[in-house]
Length: 56
Image (cartoon, rainbow, N blue to C red; front, side, top):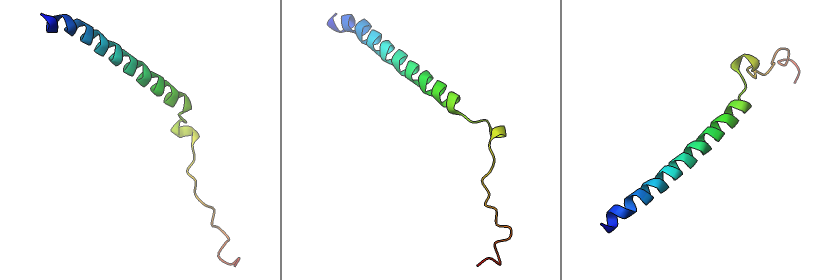
């Protein structure tokens, strides 16, 4: 009977930890989304090498 009494407490603790992990995950995702730069707003960094062949 002692083990049966502890199961609900452990289950509650596990549920609390899972809720905390999920909340942390959602915060991280929200931060990442806020810092995300849409592809349309980015440009590929390509060095401009025109006219440099004869400038040594």
